[in-house]
Image (cartoon, rainbow, N blue to C red; front, top):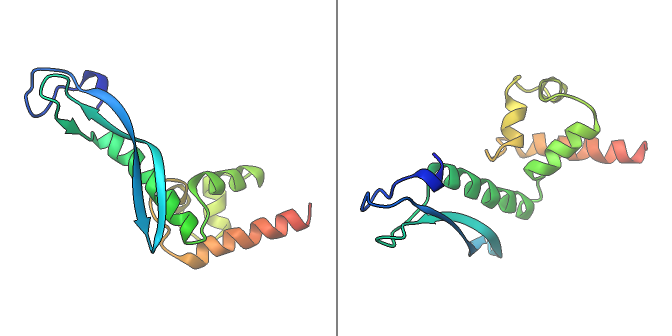
Length: 132
């Protein structure tokens, strides 16, 4: 769904206009702010809507902040590490004893299922840096 071409679900008389806002959050006692949280607004009735695509992107940003607070790697850090190791997602899954499609979930916004798995990636990253 493209917000530029999506009709307002409330009044159905105008196309939604994509917008961004700064939002403030608290997670485990840590406050953080995210810029560029997406939503859409109807120019006719002024209803504010979050499309499914916007919700997915917003949730990914929030989960990355949660990962930082939890001491875990973000989506981008996991992807960068895998690319630096010059391995595919399938190879990474095999290396860490996961199902073939599991690694892509760690690079997406989905939360990691096991802290030990992320810690294994961090340990491998430290060893890789130590070995040059």
